Image (cartoon, rainbow, N blue to C red; front, side, top):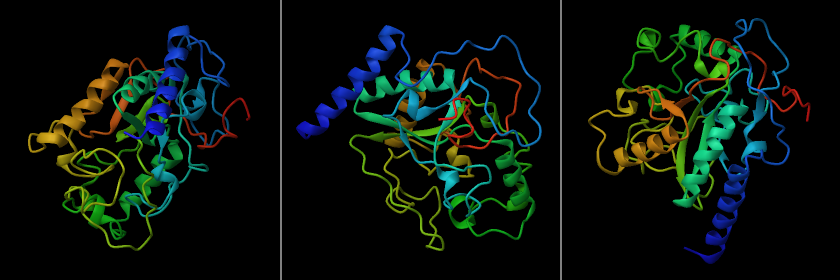
Length: 282
């Protein structure tokens, strides 16, 4: 390992470990009390997040962010409604739990990378509208090559509500350090099945998890018995590290984790993903 990479990793681990051992939030993040009860389900197009939401980068700037839904590299082939900036927003509880997991992964030579975090209800509505248009299949060759689009609701790939809208669910993976950035997707470029061998799939700087992110296929089930060897070991590495930090995996998606207990277990929010929407106004 190059000396400068080892030094950077050591600094990152030291900084994050210090925040944990002192019980102090990283600079720029004020502590907030945990809500004492549930709130009504969000309706309309709320513009501002409650104070329990933070930008992940303010809690842990070492976690990589590749916010797919801000880009056209999605299963719909277009950016998703409600993502005004390419940033990860989460409840403070979930962000701090990710920070704890990141400390452990950094020590082992990896970094977490998030694909999606809080997801506004308007984004979920965009998914639903797209799923109803069975003629729009521009990204089928990559994201759902073996699935008939008309069955996406029945098979549970698309739903009218998402745990992401409650703020404590995250889609993520692991990247070996130093991890060069993934190249941007070019709309219209040839598509390859999301379950193809890693060298053939759309490039991703992450560990090989057996499929790409958002792969609508049973091979994406976390413990699918057909996924073995290094791919299975990589999934388990991610799963065990996140479980130690308090997250629970959704067994049909190796990338999908929810902090338990959730800060808002019964509330679906609809404020947009942007710095301006956060209550600090920064």
